[in-house]
Image (cartoon, rainbow, N blue to C red; front, side, top):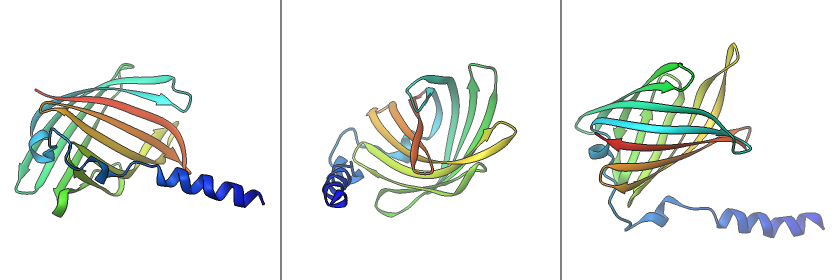
Length: 172
Protein backbone atom coordinates (compact mmCIF):
# COMPACT_ATOMS: atom_id res chain seq x y z
CA UNK A 1 0.00 0.00 0.00
CA UNK A 2 2.86 2.40 0.83
CA UNK A 3 4.24 1.95 -2.66
CA UNK A 4 0.93 2.94 -4.23
CA UNK A 5 1.03 6.23 -2.32
CA UNK A 6 4.69 6.95 -3.13
CA UNK A 7 4.48 6.11 -6.85
CA UNK A 8 2.19 9.04 -7.82
CA UNK A 9 4.35 11.41 -5.76
CA UNK A 10 7.50 10.19 -7.52
CA UNK A 11 5.87 10.52 -10.95
CA UNK A 12 4.73 14.05 -10.09
CA UNK A 13 8.23 15.07 -8.96
CA UNK A 14 9.89 13.66 -12.07
CA UNK A 15 7.35 15.26 -14.39
CA UNK A 16 7.87 18.65 -12.71
CA UNK A 17 11.60 18.80 -13.37
CA UNK A 18 12.87 21.47 -15.73
CA UNK A 19 13.93 20.40 -19.20
CA UNK A 20 16.37 22.35 -21.38
CA UNK A 21 13.71 22.47 -24.12
CA UNK A 22 11.59 24.64 -21.78
CA UNK A 23 13.95 27.53 -22.67
CA UNK A 24 13.23 27.44 -26.41
CA UNK A 25 12.68 30.99 -27.69
CA UNK A 26 14.07 32.72 -24.58
CA UNK A 27 16.31 35.76 -25.00
CA UNK A 28 19.07 36.72 -25.23
CA UNK A 29 20.07 33.79 -27.42
CA UNK A 30 23.05 32.00 -25.82
CA UNK A 31 25.79 31.69 -28.44
CA UNK A 32 28.21 29.49 -26.47
CA UNK A 33 31.15 30.04 -28.83
CA UNK A 34 30.74 33.82 -28.90
CA UNK A 35 30.28 34.15 -25.13
CA UNK A 36 33.24 31.91 -24.19
CA UNK A 37 35.65 33.65 -26.55
CA UNK A 38 38.28 36.07 -25.30
CA UNK A 39 38.76 37.21 -21.70
CA UNK A 40 36.17 36.54 -19.01
CA UNK A 41 36.07 36.87 -15.24
CA UNK A 42 33.86 34.99 -12.80
CA UNK A 43 33.02 35.28 -9.10
CA UNK A 44 31.52 32.41 -7.20
CA UNK A 45 30.63 30.67 -3.99
CA UNK A 46 30.42 27.05 -2.91
CA UNK A 47 27.70 26.07 -0.44
CA UNK A 48 27.42 22.83 1.50
CA UNK A 49 24.24 20.74 1.86
CA UNK A 50 22.87 23.11 4.53
CA UNK A 51 23.36 26.24 2.42
CA UNK A 52 26.41 27.46 4.36
CA UNK A 53 28.98 29.22 2.15
CA UNK A 54 32.19 27.21 2.49
CA UNK A 55 34.35 28.85 -0.21
CA UNK A 56 34.52 32.01 -2.26
CA UNK A 57 36.55 32.32 -5.42
CA UNK A 58 37.42 34.27 -8.56
CA UNK A 59 38.16 32.74 -11.96
CA UNK A 60 40.08 34.38 -14.80
CA UNK A 61 39.16 32.70 -18.10
CA UNK A 62 40.54 32.84 -21.60
CA UNK A 63 38.61 31.25 -24.46
CA UNK A 64 39.72 30.65 -28.05
CA UNK A 65 38.20 28.77 -30.97
CA UNK A 66 39.14 27.17 -34.27
CA UNK A 67 35.95 26.21 -36.03
CA UNK A 68 33.77 24.25 -33.60
CA UNK A 69 36.67 23.28 -31.31
CA UNK A 70 37.68 25.53 -28.46
CA UNK A 71 39.91 25.85 -25.42
CA UNK A 72 38.72 27.50 -22.20
CA UNK A 73 41.61 28.08 -19.79
CA UNK A 74 40.36 28.73 -16.23
CA UNK A 75 42.60 30.07 -13.41
CA UNK A 76 40.91 29.72 -9.99
CA UNK A 77 41.81 31.95 -7.00
CA UNK A 78 40.20 30.95 -3.69
CA UNK A 79 39.81 33.24 -0.65
CA UNK A 80 42.08 30.94 1.39
CA UNK A 81 44.98 31.45 -1.05
CA UNK A 82 44.61 28.16 -2.94
CA UNK A 83 44.97 28.38 -6.71
CA UNK A 84 44.15 25.84 -9.39
CA UNK A 85 43.80 25.51 -13.14
CA UNK A 86 41.30 23.72 -15.38
CA UNK A 87 41.69 23.69 -19.15
CA UNK A 88 38.57 22.66 -21.03
CA UNK A 89 38.77 21.17 -24.53
CA UNK A 90 35.38 22.03 -25.96
CA UNK A 91 33.50 20.95 -29.05
CA UNK A 92 30.22 22.18 -30.45
CA UNK A 93 27.96 19.57 -32.02
CA UNK A 94 24.68 19.54 -33.89
CA UNK A 95 21.47 21.10 -32.49
CA UNK A 96 23.18 23.13 -29.74
CA UNK A 97 25.10 20.22 -28.23
CA UNK A 98 28.26 21.04 -26.28
CA UNK A 99 30.96 18.56 -25.24
CA UNK A 100 33.93 19.13 -22.97
CA UNK A 101 36.94 17.36 -21.50
CA UNK A 102 39.42 18.43 -18.82
CA UNK A 103 42.05 16.63 -16.74
CA UNK A 104 39.86 16.49 -13.61
CA UNK A 105 36.68 15.56 -15.51
CA UNK A 106 35.82 11.85 -15.61
CA UNK A 107 34.87 11.02 -19.18
CA UNK A 108 33.15 13.79 -21.08
CA UNK A 109 30.86 16.66 -20.11
CA UNK A 110 27.77 16.74 -22.29
CA UNK A 111 25.14 19.39 -22.62
CA UNK A 112 22.86 21.41 -24.83
CA UNK A 113 22.12 25.08 -25.42
CA UNK A 114 18.51 26.12 -26.02
CA UNK A 115 17.41 29.77 -26.00
CA UNK A 116 19.27 31.61 -23.23
CA UNK A 117 20.23 28.44 -21.30
CA UNK A 118 22.80 25.67 -21.25
CA UNK A 119 22.32 22.48 -19.26
CA UNK A 120 25.29 20.17 -19.01
CA UNK A 121 26.38 17.37 -16.75
CA UNK A 122 29.66 15.69 -15.89
CA UNK A 123 31.62 13.94 -13.15
CA UNK A 124 34.51 15.74 -11.51
CA UNK A 125 37.38 14.54 -9.32
CA UNK A 126 37.89 16.95 -6.43
CA UNK A 127 40.45 17.00 -3.61
CA UNK A 128 39.16 15.53 -0.34
CA UNK A 129 41.71 15.36 2.46
CA UNK A 130 44.77 13.55 1.16
CA UNK A 131 42.76 11.87 -1.61
CA UNK A 132 40.16 12.75 -4.25
CA UNK A 133 36.50 11.90 -4.61
CA UNK A 134 34.30 11.95 -7.68
CA UNK A 135 31.12 14.01 -7.64
CA UNK A 136 28.40 14.52 -10.25
CA UNK A 137 27.76 18.08 -11.39
CA UNK A 138 24.43 19.23 -12.81
CA UNK A 139 25.23 22.57 -14.38
CA UNK A 140 22.72 25.21 -15.54
CA UNK A 141 23.94 28.42 -17.21
CA UNK A 142 21.64 31.32 -18.07
CA UNK A 143 22.70 34.21 -20.29
CA UNK A 144 21.27 37.31 -18.61
CA UNK A 145 22.76 39.93 -20.95
CA UNK A 146 25.11 39.63 -23.93
CA UNK A 147 28.06 39.99 -21.50
CA UNK A 148 26.79 38.37 -18.26
CA UNK A 149 25.89 34.80 -17.39
CA UNK A 150 24.67 33.17 -14.16
CA UNK A 151 25.70 29.57 -13.47
CA UNK A 152 24.10 27.31 -10.85
CA UNK A 153 25.56 23.87 -10.26
CA UNK A 154 24.22 21.10 -8.03
CA UNK A 155 26.93 18.84 -6.58
CA UNK A 156 25.78 15.24 -6.01
CA UNK A 157 27.45 12.25 -4.38
CA UNK A 158 25.69 8.86 -4.54
CA UNK A 159 22.59 10.62 -5.93
CA UNK A 160 22.30 13.01 -2.95
CA UNK A 161 22.88 16.75 -3.34
CA UNK A 162 25.82 17.62 -1.08
CA UNK A 163 26.45 21.17 -2.23
CA UNK A 164 25.91 23.91 -4.77
CA UNK A 165 28.06 26.33 -6.75
CA UNK A 166 26.80 29.74 -7.85
CA UNK A 167 28.86 31.73 -10.32
CA UNK A 168 28.51 35.02 -12.19
CA UNK A 169 30.59 35.11 -15.39
CA UNK A 170 31.26 38.36 -17.28
CA UNK A 171 33.02 39.11 -20.54
CA UNK A 172 35.83 41.62 -20.14
